[in-house]
Amino acid sequence: MSKIIAVFNQKGGVGKTTTNMNLTTALAMEGYRVLTVDIDPQGNTTSGFGFEKEKIENNIYDAIINGDDVKNIILTTGFKGLHILPSNIDLAGSEIELADKDGRESRLRNVLEPVANYYDYIFIDCPPSLGLLTINALVASDAVLIPIQCEYYALEGVGQLLNTVTLVKKSLNPKLGIEGVLLTMYDSRTNLSVQVAEEVRGYFKDKVYQTNIPRNIRLAEAPSFGQTIFEYAPQSKGSKAYLELAREFIERQERNGQK
Image (cartoon, rainbow, N blue to C red):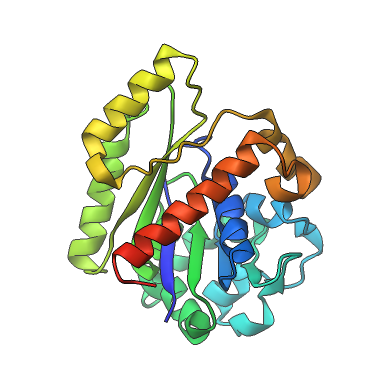
């Protein structure tokens, strides 16, 4: 059975999609079987892997809302062992459609169950909100990975985020935990980044990864070319950081006896 991880922060622009794309790719490069699930109606993970969202016939909307077989929706990426469950704008109205459906909070969990055994890890790229799609991701997941940008008010909203995780754990998914906290857009040359890192580490303790993701223009550019950082700029600081993160992630799994 795979481990399912939601990449989650209700703030936008903190590096959720960048992390989801590049961490899953790095894990596949390390030999793991990985599925990345795009439940953001913007479909940035989908287009980031080079797929034309508008031309995809079936996507996660069809699985969650219509009950279509997920095995017919999953697509193969250009990386061995890495698959994607794509999204597009069809998903935008799903919050309203889910509202009156039975088991509305667990639709995604039911979608993933038939394929979970095929993968070592499943990562879910969440939308920047606390709506029903995000609740579905948290109900389906074993743990949450939280990217936090090194900027002013970095911890603003984190209390609400953790409260949401606690509520889901209490009422819908008792196994849900915090996988880790990732510092993104880090610049060691600035006092701000250093101070934010200290603040976040003080708050989350050993849940924070030692690997920091640097502020790197190549990371920002890569998705617009439909590529991961490993294709677009394999020698960049961003590429090296995500490889380092993947290895730290694997070490944690092994240390905890999970993989």
